[in-house]
Length: 410
Ligand SMILES: [Zn+2]
Image (cartoon, rainbow, N blue to C red; front, side, top):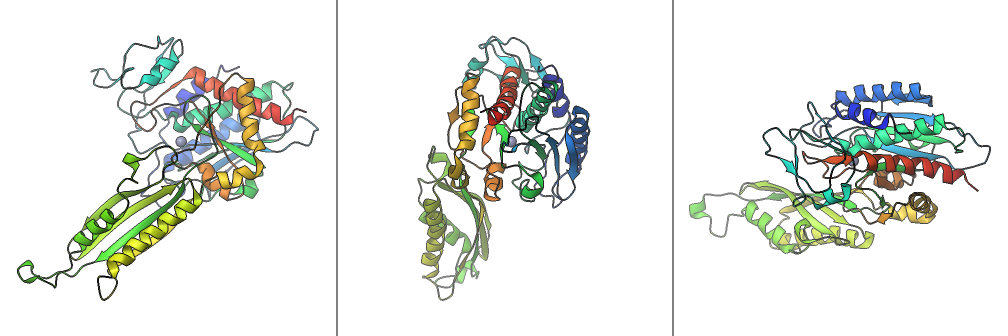
């Protein structure tokens, strides 16, 4: 069933598709366009229909027509083509067959970087499995090429096993998830699915339908600079106001002191001189009301500082980035139930926890395509310690096939 899964995956990770947050094009890098065309050819070769590359949004899409007369909902499966902000040149995947679950895996020749159970206790979950790791110089790109390989392999299985009955399945592979803009131009109507799943989660069992609500705040502070020798009662040091601003926010509500369902303010960047200072915050909370209150808190701190001066010195520009997909998905929980039941039918224990972040599904759900996230199997994403097990990818492939089948069952 899975004979092409590994070769497919290895082929994808060796193709460089890193995204670039400084680029203003869609996709952000030309390597993603080239990869999209490779996937387009492969999809056509498998026998998917209506395969096309959309130049406007960088998505390559295709359709697996229904093989049942039943009126069942159209499901989409989505994965992203780009890799994270880490060296992705000449990815050289290493294969460790029948890993024993305890020994240390040397990544580079010198042995400077290792996967060991002390730093990465999750390794113990992979006894007896085939691991694919990096050679210590790059990331692996299992995020999200495992997702692409799984979807592609699941389509191959469904096509070669016509006895497996399913409704219409839509497939989409898109750009620039890692720089947070990939889904912005997605065309929900063109895709034509009733709901979808991103195959972009971590270890086996992950099923996510709750993400952060997210906003960014840009703070600009106007100072008044004079000679420090004669500054008394005249100088307004913009840097000092920036320090005051940060200190007036709740000191415990920062990423390094929060977990689970706790939200935060994260000061991401600060720069300045006495004349002018700039700060960038991201604001995150799963709860919508708490999220709205956090944005008000930012405004209130600015107003408090401004009240000390004749004219406002602190200027706040806040904008929302994405919302908790739960707001949309909980209107029809059958979408989550279907994925959960597919996992249970395959003896996979679903792990349903809120994501402390966003997914492409956060935006897609808001755009009218409810899109929970399912595990793709990778561990230690976005760096040289990234790895994935072949068996985890097989399980994710099984989940896709099972969802398609169960959706068309009585
Ligand atoms: Zn991803």
